[in-house]
Image (cartoon, rainbow, N blue to C red):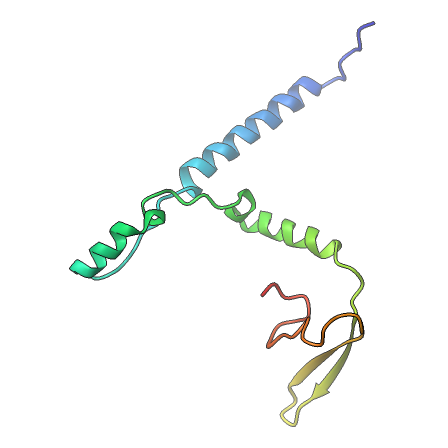
Length: 126
């Protein structure tokens, strides 16, 4: 028994294949590149650069790092997978009208410094 093809399916497959080919060509021609180094021309610099193999090979970033919209999509996908926040936030209003937020860790099973952050928010990636 032969299944009938859905109307318009070959055109969608061809369009998807063409889009994938264009994305691959863009990545290879515009994203993947040999690093450039700006430094003074000295014997020591030449010696150091000659020994750094990674400066002589093309850098290949992850596919999602090639485009700001893809980076945003990956970040949003990661945020959706986060567990419920184990923090309670306290917002302090400063004398000059500015605000400082303190996140208090509520999960006693974690070490006290598990979520220590100097700036940003509790789920910052650093």
